[in-house]
Length: 571
Image 1 (cartoon, rainbow, N blue to C red):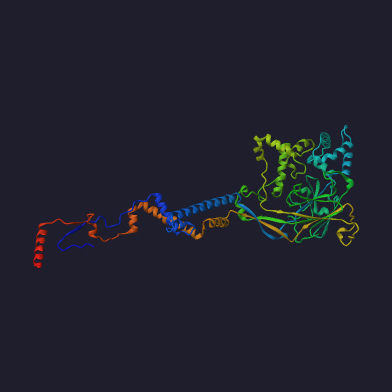
Image 2: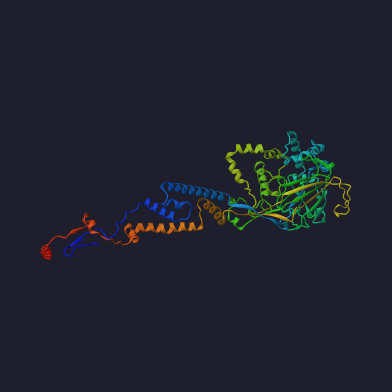
């Protein structure tokens, strides 16, 4: 407030009617200012203590270090989790242990005699075949004993190889293939020679009605419910279904039951130190071999093979991935030779054949596709043994590194099936008794149990295990995993995330644009406004804010007049 006498004129010099404008903040100071504003408003753990003015500088620094470490740990765990998800985008989980068994096809059951060469058949062959002058029938009979070595893991010695070469010359003379030779020499020229009686779902069948011949790496065998390859020349004309058979019950004698007979006197060549038969149980669309689940049935025993079926299926999201990403093929995605459907088992069998074809330029006689290449014979036995020998494969890979990649590219790339059925087995054995009357069961009528074995294959339970193969890297799992990590490290919530986005996308960006285009003076004045103030003259005389006006003649006359009036009034 300014007070002056009536006869004095006072002038005031005011420098500015507004607050002085602040200096323009540097980029670093501006970022620090906005960070402190964010710390005061966010509900993330620890941030508010950084900006709390009641704390000392040391305490605030400690809290800042703790928050910084938490942010680094959270980022590390999130990145690690994402990389793991990216490497494993698909997960297989148990969906249910109560799936119905009628949703699972019954497996294929293949029965092979352990006797690879029939003594009677070998003797008849050596007697009836046309021979050159320097070879006798007795030599042929003895050499036939080593014939299974052509595709065996047991190596033939030099003398056996020499004899097998002569045997091949005899076969060429008689225009006989390797396949026909083993078909003639097999003790299973007819399935009834090994399988004496068959029962399916408590109904008796002639074994030729439900079993068919098939060549395997072991021998000529008989198979039930086999659908891996379509063979018009060897198909069951009756009781043939378009898809594999199924059952709706479980337990003993509810599925397949057979009586197998063994003739020890006819054994001539075998790779097993035992009598009896091999029973392969595998998927109906897989070719049976020694990589399949196999059990042995010896004479005078009853074998109960309980199957625990398992089914694996995929969700629709799996198909959006490339085969290399999901690491599996669908059954109809790749065509393998003349197999009906793709399976990892069939693919590996084909891969072995491709290795034989590349190395020996021939394929095994038991391979389902006959026109795939030249059939291997006894002249190829040296090459076949090299391929079977693992040491040769390792040496060949080390010495041929330059062409290794090219060779690998020519082989089929095998990966597991995306959807498949599995058949784990449980086996129980019992000894057959000759003194127990079996007339009450029609299945055992007129059966002599000497050198016989009974094989029962059935589902162990009414329920099956069902697996689901699903996409692991989806938004639900990402939200759950990443949200849990961020919540543990920083106390992150959906609301705090919204506040973070709101603060940095609207307030910070808007303020930055305002500083850039509007200017600091207008920007600050928009928030500070016009500020009035009171000026005290006496306090600001030293700063020359208030100065006396210059005297004029009028001022001198008025000053004398005032003095005269004051003198008159006094006296």
